Length: 310
Image (cartoon, rainbow, N blue to C red):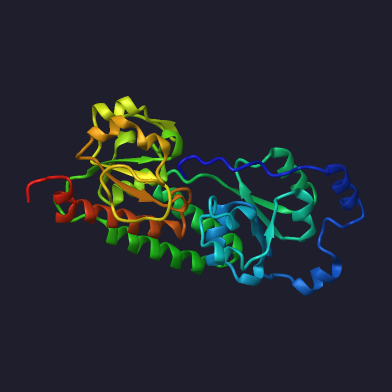
């Protein structure tokens, strides 16, 4: 969502795969075809953590032959790890995917072109999803994934859930957007044309980095932020907790810089990493977190902590 580039899928042992294709092993066996039946819902392998999260919600469990291994990794998943582990997993290697005999493979637009060509040459349908750069693009992805799974009505239900979350996140009339920096490890920030920037705006924040012309996954120099500090730093790190002025033991090393001690009117709020990279069911969760931050920033407890007049 902010710019995480997924590792390319493995395309190793292609000669062996071609040999499999020649003897018909790369395609669905006749018995499987008969059992599957014409017009049956597609059997799906997902190789992208963002499509994993959506498909787990809009497809039948029996349709999903495997999700990506990313969704089993707490550092990379965009869905609940325990839920992801209820599904089979794949390492994304071409031979591993082919062995599952899927009707549909969903992967990233960043996948290795040779891998995509190898999968398609074996008769597999391959669809790709990119990084959603706006709420509208994220909505379109949900519609596409639900349609590919054969359940457009479930996609509509998820979109209704997203729309309710957007409506509930809207700040009250007359609210002045709160200047905020969403800071990833290494000083990366989401700038213009990013989904998280769009959602920050929906929840009543002004994306500091976007307003200063930065693009996706650019670095915000510390000096630039110190010269014109935001009201809050949304620090991408462990599970959300209470906003605490100053630094904390789990924040990125850059946030320990001594110069930040001078920003006595800039608060910190942790944002869980699995909230910022994907759309779909992640959107309501991120909006809930942003609203909680906004309400705490506007509350008397933080005013007192920052020494503001009561």
